[in-house]
Length: 135
Image (cartoon, rainbow, N blue to C red; front, side, top):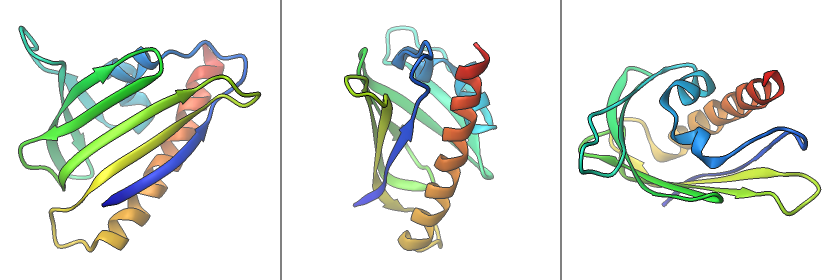
């Protein structure tokens, strides 16, 4: 089930790469939370995320210049959580297309989870643009 499908506009002149979204320090600032890189020896990159009172592990499945795909490993606030971020730079307005699939793993109904996620990602988009302008 699609929980989020949002377009995040980016500054046209900003130096942005998808690899920034794999950088835990940068991502912590974007989401105003704590994200820590885990020991990834011989594994796909993993990070520990502490967000809205939930702690969970994300694993990066694919990372390229135009796409980042990740999933939550084990229990998290979203069952079967998989996210895909596409960087669209071939237009006059570069942007990220962010899609999250899954369903609520808590008492929160899916429709309310969608509202909360939309709000969180709108704020994260504003922080991302601000960080890119500062560089």
